[in-house]
Image: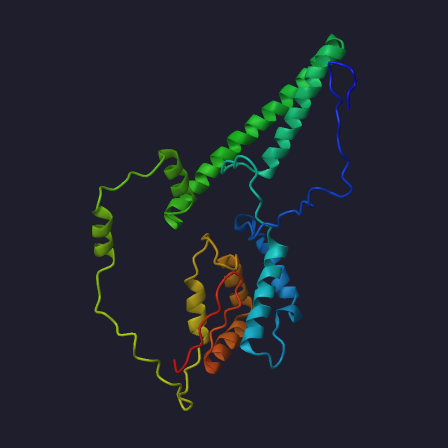
Length: 284
């Protein structure tokens, strides 16, 4: 269109439908094991006997699926989900209480700044005293949190040498030093010495129907649970070891029945989300 002017028209178009899809909130996978509420976990294990039983006559695959649901339900009721990181990660001594105090300090600071433009001298002095008190309380809480966190880190050094204290120190040190060219292969040969070659062309022996497998005992289950390390990263199912160990302690007969059924039927269920199905064990 010619407007007979030095300026052009500003045009725009109206779309009939939404141009962008809905922003579906991301549900984080896994749970914050450090915030595990042991009281809530043990209470739910004790007061929910019917929810922690397998259906009668169920096959091991269905029992494994039910076990995963039970563990996920216990995690949902005893600890929060892992937070989705947005921006910078909080320091190890930070907590929700400190975050609440910091919000209160920021609000008091804004009230004091507004009072400098609107209120009289008495109002500004009152807001300044309130802001100073909240800021002093925040600084005191930060010092206490740092001191308490330092004590916990010192105790963790003996319990878990590769845990949080190790990661904090390695992060401060910066990038790792690169090894000289060719030294990686020498280190691998020392750590993993060569063995005799295995002929994989030989097929798997057929299953023996008369072979009676020795069932797992309660002592073996207790030994397995005692070897579960705490404070470690979970497996593909994101279930912390602490929850598995507590379930095995309270419902040991249920887990022992599941393990023995899998052993007798000669199968290895692969019901963990994100993993490939496990192979069928024949004659083992």
